[in-house]
Image 1: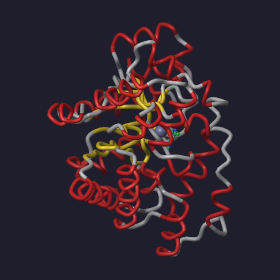
Image 2: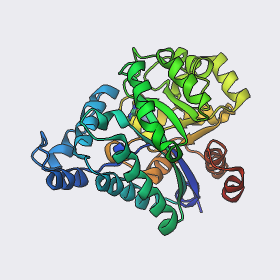
Image 3: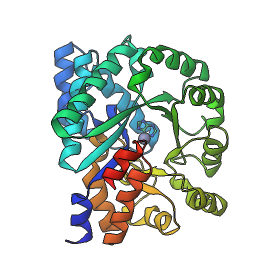
Length: 326
Ligand code: ES4
Ligand code: ZN
């Protein structure tokens, strides 16, 4: 078995997937029809043709439009169930799913509808597919910290359904420090904390995520390579980075997968993982990310094993489940 074949076959954990980013155009149109929602695109092909992104914001505009078809518990269940079936095909055995309550509450969809729909799909994935999973609630960083506090408050009745919080959406201009107080509150509540940083933003935002938000993982973090001190810190602490190569390519963070910094980060001793981010929008689920990255960076089987082990090391699973997975 060569490295690419091993990358596809090896059991792995996915730690950076926005569940709303797994919504395929076909399902968007099916849900639009079911719910009587009008879309700005005439059909699946026209929508897919619009997936030519120049940066993060150009993607987010379409991503939020796509999510507008989600209204009922069944919609959230159907979306997540479709993801879990894809994950199964890629030998994902554990998944930690981001969801964006504010994208839905802004349209009048109750937080409980979102969480119950996702929770029932998780249970089904465990029983029918043997995939363990967890939910991580993300705050939209282009909105205020006050909004984030209100979002947390609305989700607390469903506390047992999510294990942590994250920070996503437009990065530049919305540094982690903006959310220092709400993250402190989340830590007090015993929630795990992660944040997107160093995707389009500078290494400084990664330092803020570490020092001010006290994150347990950084999502993306590809800017680390610009800062030797930060690289040394990440190598020393093994603070994991959930890297998303096809996302970085599609959002023009890198011009060519062969220029992606993942291999350099791995060789520097960082705990890097490979993830799909928004697979319906970026051209591939887990195995497409793994296979294309291994190919482009000419990684070997030892690299593949190291990255798969990192995915479990970086996960929030119990020590017992981790021992089963490793
Ligand atoms: C996202 Cl790629 C990316 N970056 C930041 N926020 C996001 N939300 C969904 N995908
Ligand atoms: Zn992301």
